Every structure is written in C-alpha cells, then in structure tokens.
Length: 75
Image (cartoon, rainbow, N blue to C red; front, side):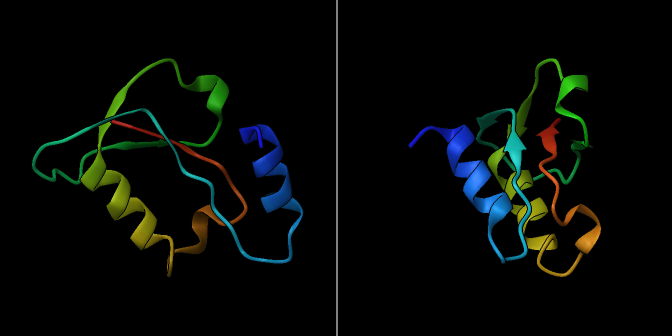
C-alpha cells in the first residue's frame, strides 16, 4: 500500500491520530532540540535524531496540540 493511501485510511478512521513526518533519521545522544513544522510545504530539508522523534511521539500521548495533524520534524 502506498504511503498516501495509508495516511488517507488513518485520517478517515475513527481513531485519534498524529502522523509524524521526520526528516532523515540519525543516531546519537538525545538533545530534545528539534523543530515541529505544521505545514510540510515550509519544510525543505533536514535531519533529526531518532531519540528526538521518540520524545515527540511519546509527548503526543498526552499533548493534544498536534492531534489530527501531520507535522514534519527536523533539527
């Protein structure tokens, strides 16, 4: 299934969702420093630590500010 179709199925479902779109994933020590860009058209390029993506996703369990959004994550 192509990613566009997968996102469509998630968005049309009855569940609460947030789709994280990370830049190029890298390893390294956690920094907690990254940008969350709401509009993918404003994102050009970037990298992000896997640990920072993990932090964002775990926060979204209780922080509903990005509920029903698909933000781009980058350093």
